[in-house]
Image (cartoon, rainbow, N blue to C red; front, side):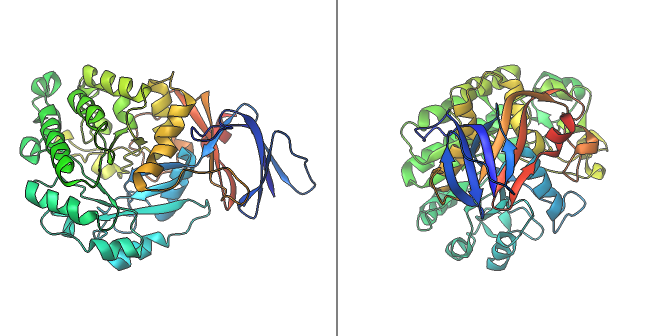
Length: 426
């Protein structure tokens, strides 16, 4: 048995949210809840005094290396990184090798077990080979356990996109569509602006995102269906989506945590660790993302975890791959750059919102509920260090930098797992 003692419970939908409580866990489920609980012999006591506890966090956009690219990430390392980041569920993207588009591949990933009790969610390919031309076997994949569907790349054909949204309604699943117009982005290396001009790099204009998101909003308004637009990066798109969500109940969007931290100025010295897609934009865009986050307008914050072996990063800028190994610093990116964010909005962005997007019920803290909690400390500071890093890849811009917001650990059906970063800071 485990007793989580004196934690501050945070769950916006719960009447006891922001109360200090203790929770007894027996055989992986909640056995007792109270302001004080009697302690028994042979019981593990976790003193959570002063720390916050919420329903487990969910990362909706996570790329893995195994099995096709084990040099980037292994099955074991991705779960270690997720646990260190406070996530009790992570959603795999279908851009695996081979593409995650068969019944067998869905079952394979859904059966991935781990010592942390983390649940692996699967976003299966919405189109064959992710080419945006022919629908994948959506109903079969959904029945096999696919939690959502993703295009990974933009679907340019508007007619096909509308038919896909209509067909997906038979599965009651959400489509994740990376919305940008590829005719604007071909060969692009970073945001199109002063830095790209000065450094002689091909630019990726904000317009590429803005026009495609405008199109997607128009189409989903016509067809209906559940549409999620991940990793929104521009000021105009944020405002457009915030307004459109008022009339489109099943439209949602997310922001990648690292977009809150940097602008295209970070690439002025050709540092490939900052080469991401969508690219960092201008300061006005970053400020709009921060403003929207404070207001709780995004439905989720995602890691967009993209672990990359140094062979893909420590090379010439134009040949370097896009992406950040970010599971372990997602929460800290949020708290470092939006430090006055309320705990309710923090949990909304990391737990409640992702559940709603996937059609999952809100977590209810009641007897016999499964143990699935994240413990965190918004005020704590720490320094990510390479020697404590859990991901197999080190392409993260925060290594060696002081950050705010620290995950204490996760508590799941397999027990309490303290964050190695926390353990090394104390």
